Length: 546
Image (cartoon, rainbow, N blue to C red; front, side, top):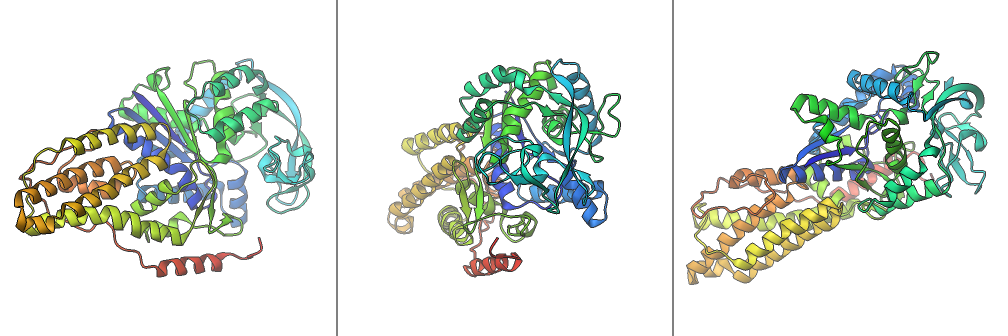
């Protein structure tokens, strides 16, 4: 089967923080799993380089938007690489191939009958000397009276326009904004209500938050959205009379899934039409705040183009991740930056924590104490301990030769069932249940080793001891494969030691196989890490009251 997995495109105007990783990591699990199943996988994402956020950052630093976005793009690439993200293509919206694809798409889109021209007030900041994207205007929500952005009120959920806000100000400099009339192209999303409602009503595998949010957006009344903006940094509008304007980033960044997958298709021989055809399966992986872009905006663009693009099958949308009980704030520098931790902590350790304790169905909190306890207790104390005690015993007493053992029908059946159960959980986006299911088996394996007492049977009943160790090797082999989508680095070590491939099926290591020199999979974390990291957070927070 052709599988497309699209990970959300982070803004290239600042470093990644742990909330980004918690939201995006499920995409890599899906990609690795489907490849192991033999599917044709296209896992794509990239850096969102255009728009107001990048332009404002560039102006503050006296650099060009291209320089700013390229800098953070390269930082993102390195962070994702060190964390084991297996993208088939991680690109950027400033790439010429993306820009060419978007211009061609929009040229067709403007002929669809769903695009029209309208003069509209557009927020302008005299201080910053910039037209502002809707989300860069803040003010008071006219419905609930709480602080809101120009596109939506997070408190009451009302969809807004910047001119609807009371006392609108620039989100960057906090000075009042003015509104200037400007002519732009709009897409009539309001005319696609039936198609979008049908899509969400038939979405049996979307996350609950995606279904709820999308129903609310539709029920409150879909609004038409501007396709163009008076911004200098972006993709030029392919229409006469719109020189000097650019395509609004929301109308081009989501098209990156198409442009990036087309690049993969051209380079690897995948059939692009089949990848976007009716028999493919598409996953979109992102955070809660990106839900409408993937359940309303992207489908609206795909439907309006009339080519017959494949619509989203599964929305894997996480909830929010907090940090030590508080909201992550990039503006207040209250965050754990990915670039700062990828070289200090084991990549599999970070992946395990975000998958086993992440914001999958509800908001989750990252705690350094819980992270250290999770690493030492589960990865090291349960999984690493079982692997090390089993293989080291064989190295010590059997010269590293896997002993003879008879097949254990019950264990074989349990392993076979695990592949089916864990695979089904991954496919429906239940990553936390999948990880916990595998580690339940890890804990059972440790009890098995203990109850079989090979340290006693080695001298009292050698045949029984050999059988126990043989079974432990088979368990380890299959744990390596089952955990590879989640913990690729440690699994790759085990697969190399045991000469395993990563096909999603039960594996056997033959008796007589000679184990190589075994290394410890995970090092213990000193509990002082907790104090050090928490103090570091306090030190980087400029105002503890915010």
